[in-house]
Image (cartoon, rainbow, N blue to C red):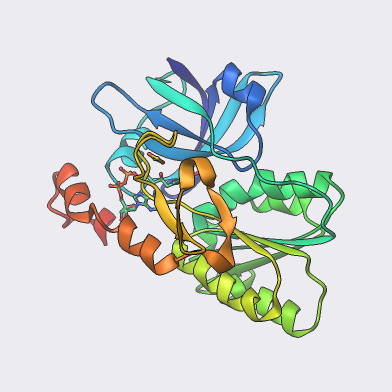
Length: 278
Ligand SMILES: Cc1cc2nc3c(=O)[nH]c(=O)nc-3n(C[C@H](O)[C@H](O)[C@H](O)COP(=O)(O)OP(=O)(O)OC[C@H]3O[C@@H](n4cnc5c(N)ncnc54)[C@H](O)[C@@H]3O)c2cc1C
Ligand code: FES
């Protein structure tokens, strides 16, 4: 059992857990994730390791309540425990001194971007971060990102915080102005990562995205997480989750993510009419 030591609400429907998991904390690196199961009736879901404390033996998970399991998770409190926690899984982010790295985080994607951006900074890169959300209430980790970034842009769809617009807007402007960018790392909704790839493609700027297909085992045994990258089938849980954005078939990924929509609704026993499904 893995005890939740701390619970914090970062935004409506976005929760942070600090979980006791000394073996995972000892080995994990930025970019890796865990697969958890709440109880014996639960499904296995992947969540990124948003932070870790090796000395304390803890990892931090940040999740958005989007369906049955994440809502059930959100109802747990400090002192409760998770039945299973497997990890660290996936390949760690390749960290080195590239020069100027732009880190783009959309919505809950800011959580996985944070440890990666921090590692780029610690490796001596100039880190320009762009974080965005639908509105100010949904923006997370602003202070944490500010602390490890040389420049931080904030965007909201409705203009309630920072610039009104999308996270790709500052990136477009930097590229159009001829700013030298050596690497772009983008994590967020698939449609956002696809847009970032289209923005950087004409400039030939190497762009990495962290993909979030449906996963089951997370150890390379089932192919549930397969994605087409460079016209080859890759298993995101073992070959990724990070890939060259210019080679990813984002439309195929989006289609596969929707495969179980009707089952997800049935599992929720609301018939899909509650606000969580709109
Ligand atoms: C490697 C990896 C790391 C992830 N890290 C995080 C994280 O740090 N924080 C976080 O909040 N989420 C993360 N996710 C997404 C998370 O796993 C899903 O939100 C979760 O499985 C949904 O389960 P559910 O039963 O609550 O929702 P469901 O009822 O299964 O689904 C509800 C809605 O969420 C969508 N959804 C389901 N699975 C995913 C998915 N894998 N990615 C995107 N949308 C999905 C469905 O299409 C549906 O519309 C990650 C996914 C992967 C593959
Ligand atoms: S989740 Fe089964 S192979 Fe990746």
